[in-house]
Image (cartoon, rainbow, N blue to C red; front, side, top):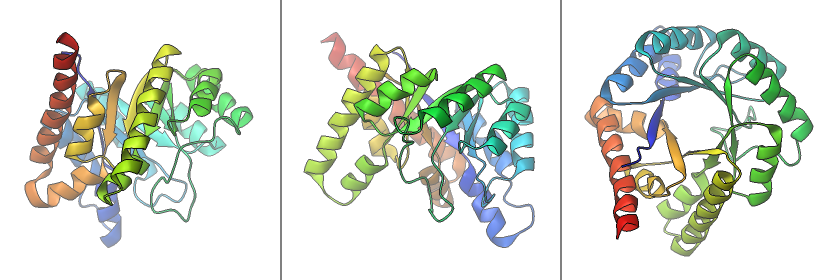
Length: 257
């Protein structure tokens, strides 16, 4: 069975820490627990306003991931400041995302088609520093082609609208968005891009998206941190790992028939 990697985003452990101040809960401890539970890598978003992850967190996460032999995925805005920090930190990967100070979380994909002259130099600078770049985009065919032209080797498809439509019972809309995700994953793969996906995923939606054969990695955070309140972080991650594996197994079974 081809395996879908699970990247665990630990941003909102830091959100909880920062709500009270002090040192606890420590997102680096959460990252270590996530790796113990079966995470293939750790994702963290250093935002301009430092609302959750802080600069020292990124340095400590990089040290942990190097020690444990797991990749760190640095989510970041396309700014000179963040490119400089990532170039110094040298994580395994950097995922370029849109960022607005007033948003609660990342609300959509990067407009690569409209911002090529801004994104492409960031991709080149990070690649020169040895950082593997992914672009967080909508499953829009124009955006996928534009992403390919930047030279980035990876795209991460935004699954938030699909998850929201499912949660609100808008079944027809959800089905249409899923077909867009399916078509986008196919085009990206045809162009030689590695396909990741993320945002808003829970156990059921992660299982469904893992059935798309082009998807190599899912990045999931908020839901797992929420589930950890009730079950603990390690059981939540193990259950997510099982859901993802089950989704990919369903695809492989259908393919063999």
